Amino acid sequence: MTRTSVRAPAHARSPTALLWHPVHFLSLGLGSGLSRWAPGTMGTLAGWFLWPLLVHQLPIEWLLAWLIACTGFGVWACGVTAHALGDNDPEAVVWDEIVALWWVLLFTPANWLAQGAAVALFRLFDITKPWPIRMMERRVKGGLGIMIDDLIAAVMTLFVLAVAVHYDVLPR
Image (cartoon, rainbow, N blue to C red; front, side):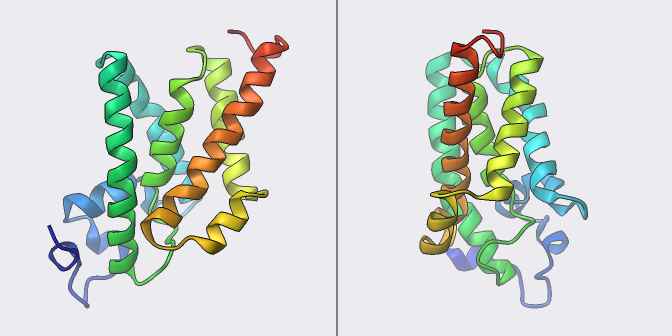
């Protein structure tokens, strides 16, 4: 599939108008990125609510393959949707939040307290963009740039969670 085959016509470049195409539909987080209030948070919450469908249905090997595929797909699809919207990193594109959160949840203890802390920490890092997230966001463009800052936020989240679990701040 080429970039032009998924690009919306010039008159249909609002995020809502792009929902007709499956690539854009996924990039827009199944529509969660269209929220007028905190689209990144809505995408993250969509990822959290979808997580049980994945983790309870797939063996770990398939789950890892799925996450790798979703990450690679996200680099391409987020870039395609950003191009269609004429913006380097549109707020409505939230596939990056969804997939990065799935990586976090894969390594997070399976209890509501730990998962809630993971979601909150992930959003904190994604919103505040401490170093090296901000640096990567400025230097890397396209779909990879859209995905990379959230993947770094995921790694930072996992580090803090590991420390919290190690020191019994969060249950295992």
